[in-house]
Length: 354
Image (cartoon, rainbow, N blue to C red; front, side, top):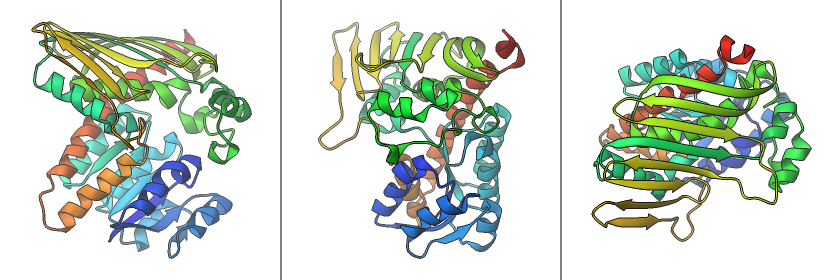
């Protein structure tokens, strides 16, 4: 049995991570930590045998864990993940990976040195469409990549001022699946607004699909308060030959579907990845092409897949098989660390002042 510990007992852990752990036949939630006693008690009440701790350090000191799920607010991701890796535990970190690129790259180096799995919870990357665009680009079927254009709209703007009720109205979601008012509105724990909360999704998707590094980064943001943004426009020079543009905003309103798509243009073909619908359409100059969409029963946003995939990889090692799946996840974390470089630039002193 793969023993899982949880850091942070908030809304997203309860909605996404814990159900995936409970549904996994080879895993069990055995420990949880949270500074809020009420949240901690509510989480462990549904997991018989799970021990409660106020800090991750206390939990790691006495719990023999195989996997640590870090679902605390963003400002605490790096410290909790590092503590897990130093305790020889494979780690899943909720997005945004970390607030600073140096922290993210340091965690990747530590995981590799210890042959541990390090993964970032980015569900858009766990679909058939995401796998296909990675293959198309890796195998060169679109030729040399020239340009990437992304639009990512969401309904999250009210969260950056703490108006959870308006956010729930826009997404037609019950209060049972809602963050606390300060989770996204407090710069000290969120590290920013839309860039951290949402733009991190689409930039990570581009880095994951292309495997590129951001060589030059330029960005402009709309700031609603110091450090708290609600829209981003980014221009990137990617390693190789490609340039990329990203527009991302939390200001979508009900009545018109939010766009969430990335277009890849190469010298021999093009592809459009619709993140919201988990579809991919592609065509090449020689007349080939294809369409990918979720299969029967597959979610367009498989929010339980990141933790399930890490548990599977750890279980394979436990059974005596290769640790290649763990190292593949850690390679994905390195690509996610490159996205942190981009997002961090949006919150530089110059960007905030301007």
